[in-house]
Length: 267
Image (tube, rainbow, N blue to C red; front, side, top):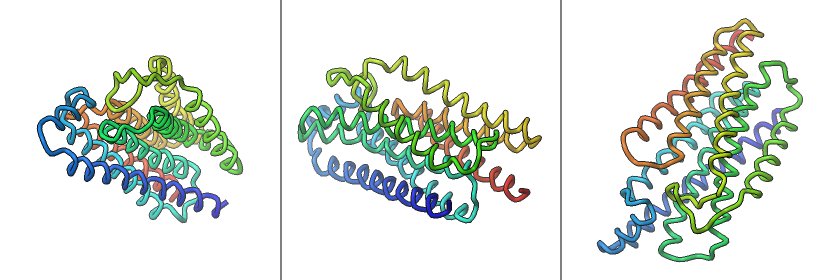
């Protein structure tokens, strides 16, 4: 079991590192490319007239938080055989897929083929769905799911995420959400996503009742904080609300790590 967990987490860290490099590259590219007011106005047309670099820095800080948190969770819990922390770590690392949205700004200057825009959108949603499903799955194990099913659970998460993200209808001419192509089904998808995240918190509430351990309630709260802040950051609207959401996300990650460590110290 340990090699499986170690290898998967390592791969996820490499992917998150690549995502961090992507957003850094885009920031540097646009800093060099944008040389006049016309370029700034053109770029801000792609961001619903919000400040271009404010949005890029928001993406950067979220990606940096995902990578750094995943790295620290890997370091501090590498000897803890906890399926909860394993799936939670994967969920946090998958948050780094937000970095891909910055590529739409390069598209505005380089004009790469339309199918690449659809691919970027699908890969972003692939990462978003993995995050949500991993948060949900992390709470299943303390409710009674057997330890040996981690590989099967992860395979199903990846398969479901791939199928759903591949089947999403993409409208290349619609972009109501900043740096994201329209899917024509955002409302229905968001309802499903929100419900899954609610159930992710409920799993830990059930675990608290089943195991007679109130620390699981804090895990439910931590999952809720991460999920709520991720939904706020999904819209990439720069401002104090988004930066508070980043702080709340970091707080949720710290709370989860602290409480899961406390739980496993007594087991």
